[in-house]
Image: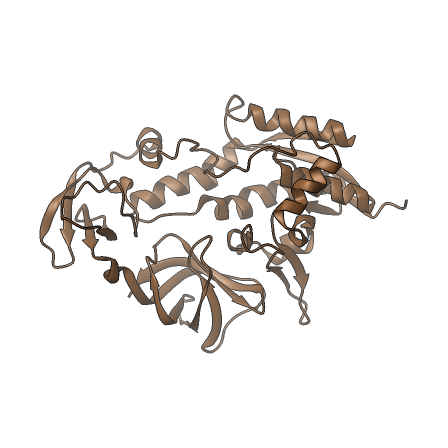
Length: 352
């Protein structure tokens, strides 16, 4: 079989990236597996071992790269800083653009590889006007386009995503039939560097800044209704763990850093029709010059709602939704779709 070219596959030790490597090998690519060590060697050991096992099974070269310096600079420090500023970040989005893709492309250039590849549930298409865009995968339940909206045109032009045309069950079946050692391995559900989900504890132990501790819970009228245990313990839309005795469920509406306050509201007060986002990252469209309608997702797993997007003179965008959306969260991203591809997106700031 004629080789199609050399491709570096990001091997995470999971079933999706393993099947991506297998599919590309089957198509005739020369495949090299790359595992990126993002954390300490001990924390990352299982990932490295599983990836090495898959590489041996496929008969491909396996390389481990240490990127925990870059991971700390771009991902962890940003994660901590955003929480300190009362925002809720999505570290996977930052990691994808600034660490994973940059690392893989740099290594690809060094090794003379034509492409890089991952096991993400998404596809890439070059549109009629020439720009590349991330497109929806075959499975809505696993679709990962939201987390990839910040990728650049240069990155997309050299990326392959073979898993995106399959359902998750099909990927499992391919892995089983190919005898891939991690075929039944469970999917990772947590932020990789905080496996116990205790974000507040992680931030408190890894921040150089002394964080404010207790402060006031206030309602939307500004009345004090209780005491919170520190702003980093809360995010917009949160219901559990508030320990407020008001006789019915209440939710976090806003985090006020300067006042060290957490604003509490009723369920119906969580809805909003307008948000602003900045910085903005353009993908399938080069830029906006006039108000345009898009399908918007305001968080991973959101089914999407239609809105009018207006570009602003300062480079930001304003999204006005047809129907109110629930728990719009500063620090998360609004990703805008057109004809099933990612057109643009931005980091959510002000909410009205």
